[in-house]
Amino acid sequence: MSYTDTVRDRVRDGDLAVVVAGIAVLALLAAAPLYLGPVETSLLITMLLIAIFGTAFNLLYGYTGLLSFGHAMFLAVAAYATAKVFNVVGPLLGLEELFGGASVLATFGLAVLVGVAFATLLAVPVGYLSVQLEEIYFAMITLSFSMAVFVMLLQDITGQLADILGLGETATELLVTNGDDGLIVSYRAMGEVDLFGWTFTFMNISDYLAFYFVVLAAFLGSMYALWRVVRSPFGRVCLAIRENPERARSLGIDVTRHSWATFVVSAAFTGLVGTMWAPLQSSVVPGIGHWTFSATPVLVTVIGGPYSFLGPTVGSFVYEYIRFTIDQYPALAARWQLVFGVILLAVVMFFENGVTGGIKSLWRRVRSNLTSGETAPAEGRSGREQG
Image 1: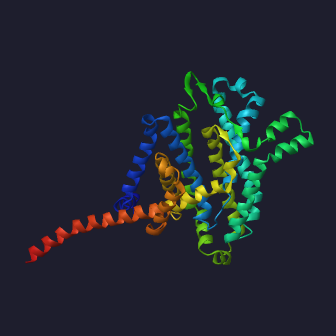
Image 2: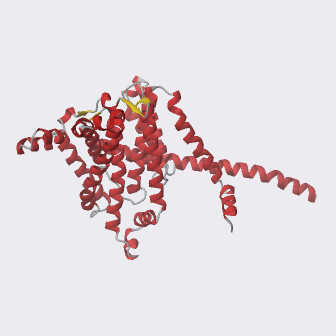
Image 3: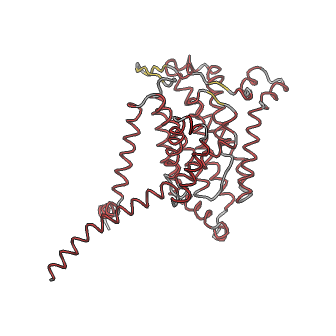
């Protein structure tokens, strides 16, 4: 069969509709900030970041069968590292003098590298210890590590140690977390950019345009990278471990080592989210490392569908939009947990594999009706001709 025949078969099987839908969604995402206000654009950025967070988490949960209740610790560590780069490392290295009008972009690029590196380094020992356990015990140990990180941030353990050991002003400034007050990432540090004569605002509270396209690029790059991971032999081994770890071991797969690698990859992408979460919120607080924030990727994955690659992305948009809509009505906002709980219960009870499962089921039903509508007249004509 030629390549042309293969493409024709894929189009005939309905892939063309998927491609067209994907292009339409990308076009909408690219055009959206040009027509939305700052509040709606900020909400859309949050949706994209939560989508990356959920998809990275689902690499561990939906594809490998490991439920983590502590993934927010990697986001928190990366976010704090980002704040330190903007507030301490950038001025210390003199990035403004080195890069001039592009210093904001240089500082942000360095923050992304440092944040992802810190999240990955934390994941190596945490993941190694966690994957020694399975099922609920894995979930509990990730929760324990997450709460330990939360307490360290909340009580400024690193800052106190630096002060006790007399490490000096610079080291103390690098290690201090400022307790429950958190750290501020000033909009001034992310202000005007002059890139080869092109001047624009990287981000402030009334202009998210440039930052939105940075986040969109990170979203597209992350989704493509994760899609390649799950479609690779590495991803197939993840599925084998999810379905039957014992059989996977009998085939010669080192389940523990592979799960560890998956954990580290998932944490690295979660760290990427943290590096952009700090500038978006203009501050970082210990609460982003709490177990309640670790529930966010779990919720969006369950809502969207854990056994679909795009499930967490769909779930993030549904989750954030419902939260935003509820907040518009004071009576609902006061009881948003109850309202959201009812919606979540309805999704779990009536949709197979979340919202994406419901969409696929509806699409199959529509295609079936269209097909039956096309074949019925043909059958009728055939009968009349025979008569």
